[in-house]
Image (cartoon, rainbow, N blue to C red; front, side, top):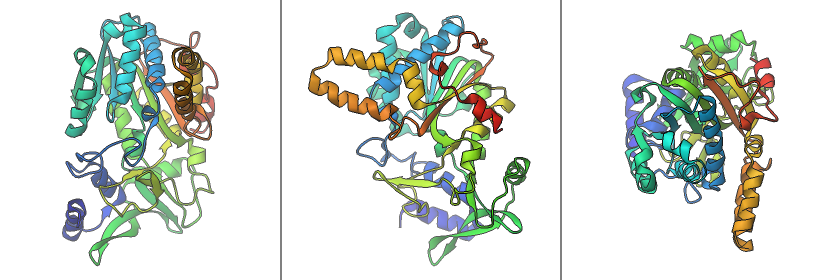
Length: 384
C-alpha cells in the first residue's frame, strides 16, 4: 500500500471521515509524498500533464513584454519584483528572463525574479536551469515569507490546484463530501456542511440546483487572494488558468462539477485512486476571483482569453521573426507549438488571463497591451 494512502486511512480510522478538501490537500501537498511535493513530480510531455510553458518560449516572452509595460506604468522603479508562484521546472522563468535580457535591458536591470516553490526537489531543478540568471533570482517557500513588493505576481495553472470543497445539493439543502474508510479502502459519503461560508456563497447568489447536483467551491482561492493583496504593495496580479464565469461554472447542465484527475496525459474522475500519484484539479471560478480580489483590495483590470492576450501582445510579429530566423523545417515545428497556445481547439480559449491591480496607476486611457482588445471583464462583473 502506498505510504500516503496508509497515512490517510490511519487518520480516518483514528479521527473519523475527512472532508474532500482535506483529502485533496493531503493528496497534493503532504510533505515529501504528496503529488506536488514528491521528488518524482514532473511536468511536461513525459509526465502526467503539460502547461503552456512546455509548448514554446514565446509564452514567457509575451508575459515579459507585458511586465515591462507594467514597470513603465509604475514609473520605472529600480526595484521591480516579479513573483512566479508554482513555477514548475522553471521554463517560464527562463523564457521570461531571456526575453527581458535580450529585448529590454533597462527593465531587466531593475528586475528581481522571485519564485515561490514549496518542493525542494523542484527548486533544485529551477536553480540549475536558471543558473545563467542567478543574480536576478530569489526563492521563498510561501507568500507569507515575502515582504510587500512593487511589481507583479504571476501564476499559471495554480488556482486549479488549490484543494476544493465538493458539495451536493439535496432536498434538505447542501451536503459536503467526506472521505471515509471501508474494507481498507477510501469511500465517499456525504454529510452536513459544517462551513457556513459554503452555504452562504450559494445562497447569496441564488444558486439552487436540483437534488443530486454536484459541484465544488474553492475557498482556498479566497484565502490566497488575501495573501496576494498583502504581498503586493504596489503593482499587478496576472492569473492564467482554465475556468469559467460563475454562470458557466454552476450551469444547470454541469451536474458533476469540474473535478478532474490527470495521470500520464489521460484524464479520469477517480480522485480516490492513485493517491499522491496523480494530479487532481478543479476549474477556476473567475467571477469569484474578481469578487474576492476586490474584497481584498485588488482592482480588476481585465479578463481575456489566452489567445486574445497573446495576440494583443504581438505574438504574430514574434512568429514572423521566427520565420525569418529559422530554417523552414524548424519554423514549421515552432509554428505548430505556438498554434497550440492560441487556437480555440487547444489552449487558446480554454485558458483565460485575469489581471488585477493594487495601488497602480489608472490605465483606462492607456490600457495594458494584453487587455487592449476582447476584454470580457464587464461580462464577468455583470455576473458577480
